[in-house]
Image 1 (cartoon, rainbow, N blue to C red):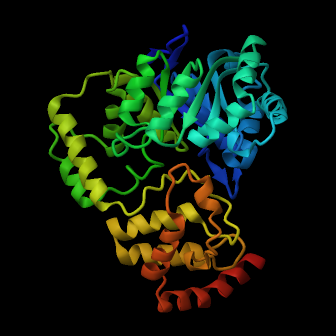
Image 2: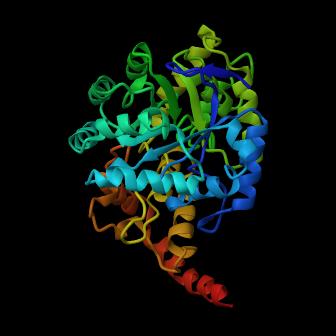
Length: 402
């Protein structure tokens, strides 16, 4: 495993961090046994940074770590734990201590190594400042309950600069991948924060898996021009590690083979190692993806739950599949998972959207989800397929009751 030093600290962090937002599940709950096996396997492979947050897995991610990973003192001594204050839910300063103390209890720890203000934008940061967040951050650091203070960011680049300058943060967490070089904080924000002495943690390195799950033929042809053949995930991760400003990246690993592959890439990918031709390949891939993508959803799930039961990340994924891969295949999958095999046995098509806008307010990508729902309804909900779904749904529901 490769390790990089966190600025303003002597901590040597594994360049691959374990993101606990997409742990393996059984139904709607974390598969604790399998998740424990995978996380411990990653730690044995050299991963020493575990990232979670208050809302991950609907509040269960922190508890899972506390009950199954951090309860072992030997493991706790090997790892750095990161979690986040859900600023988007807070309207009173009294909530700072209330939530933080609950997090310590859920995680089964006395202090947090890396604590973040979660999902800041310009307006959220200003709200937190007005509530006294700077004084509170000073307090918990002085008390030894937090070793390093940082923030994660989803907003405009100019606001990112203001937040970096607004407090003596130790690190920041930003979205950065081969598509999002200039999105949100972007490379300019990363360079600015690094020059200020902040550690840089990268999230969404694979855009929720969309850069690896299915590769359009046009993209694969570009990768195939390389002298050394690599998997798309390998390319995407190596490109991030190539940036010397990056301290580590977070991967939401939930398959054992992905953990092993990512550890291997993390061990081999040194800053500045990619040559001119390889960087040109990534630039060509980026340009082609930007031509093909319909909507930039990363599948984070912050938009959920939907008041009318629409699986928002799922239907947005099929919208991209519709335009990048097979139209017929995307339609069939869309009808199957949203009109037949739904959790409650009812259809939840995109056309059911009531345009309440709650999803857009919570979306860290600032996507125009309501417009996308209209587009999906128009392009993917053919009367014949919906009729087929209506016919198949009672059969599936009867099978559930047996």
